[in-house]
Length: 383
Image 1: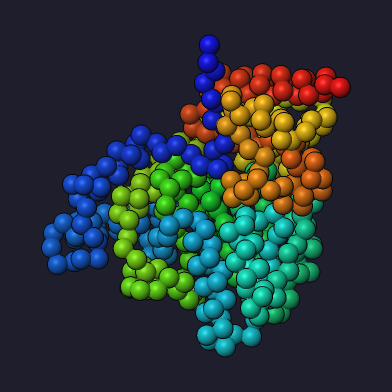
Image 2: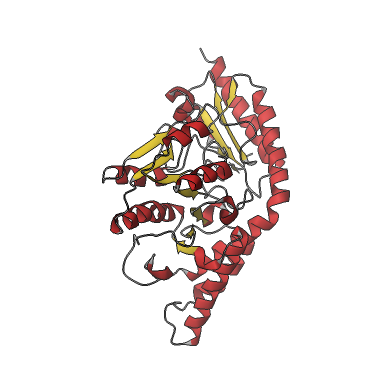
């Protein structure tokens, strides 16, 4: 009997919800016009669909529609936010140049900031504690009169840790520092209203919340200056050139509304399944939780296993489980997030990231427990 693969890598990507597919379907062939071509009815209908999607997404974030800029995903949104702020500051002669971030950020934040560091914007990368949380006193000390921007993700894509955004925002506001938040893993998973939190910029992605790949958005607080990173048209207020992908934008809004509506019940169900998974795996012994025990996403579990070799472990699991040992963008290299927690390369390789989703079942959790248990027992028994 062939065992079905249990998909437990929802931090990498999520399957598109049926409701989202249905919302997108008419805009592929029946109503396919370019929303920038405003001279005939089909194009006006497409433009209206984009603006309705913008309003629906804004409703999920409890913000104004005109604060949202559609992008190809969170990576583009992060680049537009970080490089856009820096270049706008340069253009207006702003004296502030210093940038700050955390060692556990996604590469789509760390890499643009490293690029800016090489081009005249000095960067401070702060460590985190063994639980993945930033020390607020350390963060406060890092914010100088020269600091332009701080970038901190809401929920970590590997260990699920939730940073104290409200407290961080208060520190930034008191010093006139802009705060950017990569919220790709957080939208639809936790209550998130950027206005009331005191954020200045927030990035999100459709395929992390049961929506389509290839679409995302950047939320920008009114008054925050950005320099466009993609030129060649006046779309999105001149900040993001290119024909808008109407089906994907419609799908992004549908997914955001769906995941937010389901959030309370889904969170409780997945938290119970995560606890079942943790208890089943902890019984093996030599299992260490990566990240804070409670300040984390309800559908995330990241563990390191003692007495096993990482490559062999994942080879043994891949026929039964879709899981990972780090970010989907790490291309197999050791996790910089786990390294920031103090894990050795061997411990990082022998780690498993479980990301549960809206369709995850108790049977899949039991399958994961059985598969990991068998693999670990076999390796530990080997001479």
